[in-house]
Amino acid sequence: MNIVEWEKMGLDLANEIDQTSVPAGSICLWYLGQEGFIIKSSEVTVGIDLVLSELYNAQGKTRRAYPPPFEIPLVPELTHIFCTHGHADHFDLSTVKGVLTKYPYAQSILPGGTEDRTAALDNKQISYAIEDQEIRLSEHCSVLPIAVAHETYEKDEQNHSLFFGYLFNFFGISLFHCGDAIFEPILEQRIMDIAPITVFMAPINGTDATRKSSGIVGNMDVEEAAKLAQIARARLAIPMHFDMFAHNGADPEGFVQEAKRIHATFLTWIPRLGTMLRIPG
Image (cartoon, rainbow, N blue to C red; front, top):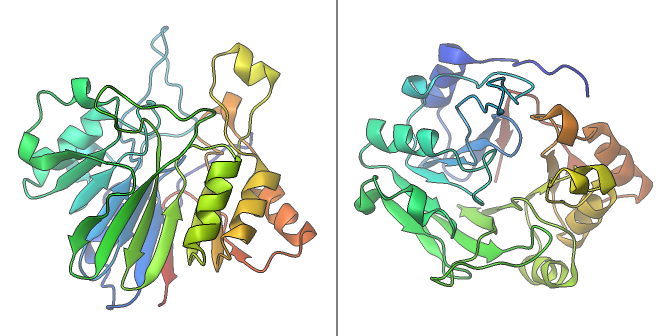
């Protein structure tokens, strides 16, 4: 995997997010690595799968291919923080705790399987996503949690899905963040049902025997992600999950080439660390 670096980071990036004015009816999004994004509308600023900590292995060495964008005390103002599932590169307790401590009015929406790790947090700031139960974020913004299979569909004892994709609606702009998911018939049908989707985000790192032997749970690959974006009748497709770990990455250019090969009707955007994209309504 190529060396990846931040286009913008630290206080410069945090200030840009805080100070960017977003007209009603449009959104801005920033890429913070792996499947982490901050999405800002005129009413809410939402973080998804933000990991602002170093991730260390048993030898005390970082597993990340690049540092976090900023330290947790610099995190920009968020109204909501979502996590798609409990794996360390998607649910980082110190990040969630840091956001909720800095912004006492912020809300965190988490998947099943994380309840035992949030016992010390303020229950008033924590809720758990329920499959197909819409969450109202503001007057013009909502999100629908959709269960996905990170190889298999799984639930906890409270019947909460362990793995979610989130279908956001910002003033009529729909954005589906797949989380970690494989391409399979149930998700394919669900995407057909909720199409068209303005912005479609999907993992592309796939799976193989080497990953399986290391206990790495699989995702869809570039061909499957492009096919699903086409089924979604997406206006824009964004590949994810390709850059944080050298042993579990992918080449996002492969996604672009696959979109060309199938004569996709959607545009593509390869996110670069710390970059912003404006999406008009």
